[in-house]
Length: 363
Ligand SMILES: Cc1cc2nc3c(=O)[nH]c(=O)nc-3n(C[C@H](O)[C@H](O)[C@H](O)COP(=O)(O)O)c2cc1C
Image (cartoon, rainbow, N blue to C red; front, side, top):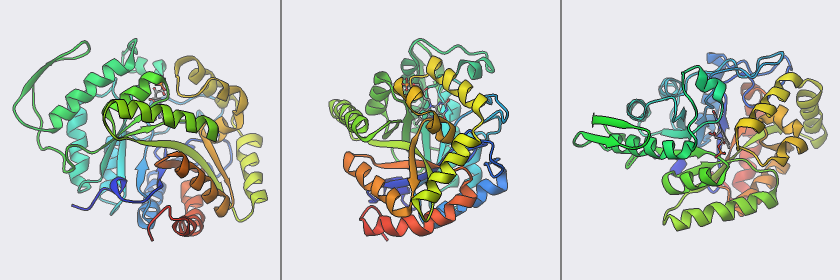
């Protein structure tokens, strides 16, 4: 088995985020916007894989956000997505992003084990405890009062099932299961890398206590520093170790002016404003995934990358950002591009060597 690159020694890990969905994280009408066709996804995954990026991370979405483009109405299911990419890539970690409310844990354990075997130990699981009630309505489900209580039971069942061994019964507040068993176990022991996408204090606790990394948002370096200190306290209290990751949206160009001009073009001039409004209003109402002031301050960041942090500039400016973030305690970032197939070649060719020079990556 090759090592899952999420466990390698690179100080700042890089992944491609949200390529399974239209727009990736952007909500824009530019003609080159990502339509998430399967062949384009494979091309982007293979570029990232061959360049040695650490991970390929899909988002979990079941419904579009409306507007002119109905942003995110196209998306691929993520276990089958990761399984299919297993045979088409060599080294990159392949995550599935799963709603703990929608997918039964015993099913998720088997699907995850399948991806881990098919990829020879490169599987990862991003757990989203969830926020979007209209999506849950598609499954006849009601979001529980505390999604993380449900998530904790879900994860306990999943990890126990993955261990194999004698059949077990499980009785909790959310699950009442009899004779649970699962084989094979995963290739990675004790289990594949577990990520939890969350922001709130209960979400941070869940990630700190039970996962390998938190995947979370931030507005600026000061806020990130405080969030990392807060998260690390929770991790220490749990007597564990866990990494801190965030999504970013990337526009990398030879000059700052070119990067700024393209950013303005896709995220302001050609933003799908109706979809941005709906997306922001839904998140504001139903999700704690951002600091509330983010919605007022950073509309452009929502059009460009669902409220993620901007990496907009020259290769050196982007690496300078990474250097700051690595010092603050980030383990890495998951990157969204307007069109990963078009944008990755320049990024990979020009940013990775500078990261090597800066000691953020091994050659
Ligand atoms: C970086 C990040 C990525 C997320 N990705 C998804 C996703 O792909 N699908 C989804 O339904 N929710 C996603 N979420 C939402 C979380 O799973 C969670 O429901 C939301 O953040 C509310 O929980 P919280 O208050 O603990 O943050 C994401 C959240 C964050 C912070």
